[in-house]
Image 1 (cartoon, one colour):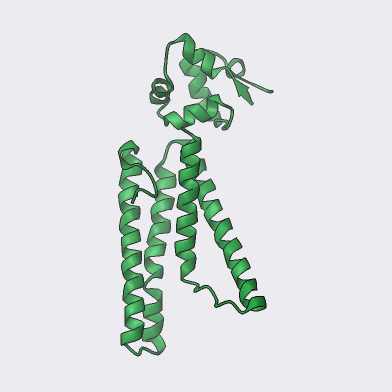
Image 2: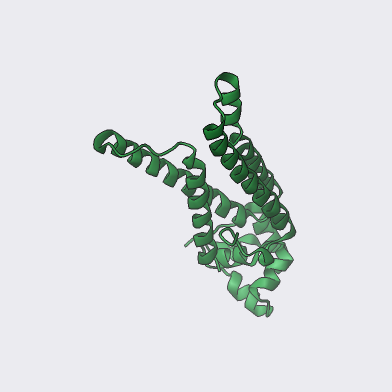
Length: 63
Length: 138
């Protein structure tokens, strides 16, 4: 699963640590999701969608 | 102590359980020392010997309880998955070493690996796997 997390984060000038704080997860988690090494659970994906005010399918997509 | 993690970078939940886990490790070390010293000094038999042999198993139950409680309280799903992977590495490597050593004992006559060493092996390999995963996730 690929995602646009890095782009969305850059648009807001957020560091990985900033995003991690907003999501209440570790910075390592944000890094792992961004690099595609870890697919988030549905609740975390919804949290990301709410945070970026975008539908889940516009953030995550099949390779 | 630095084998597991850098304490300063831990979240409050991790810090709390890290302290509990380290306390368990000290208890386990103490129990192992007591048993190894007592078996040479006291000639225990029957139920007393069984009770003494069970002593180092008690902190292991406690350590498993601490890890289980941590996994329940840890909200970060990625960190949870890393812990599970590290424990699986620990189990896998312990079983692999046990199997290899077992066959070496059968075929080559090597002295058998003391079974109480399994816990140390599991802990060390699990902790190393944890450190490698943390380094990869920077």
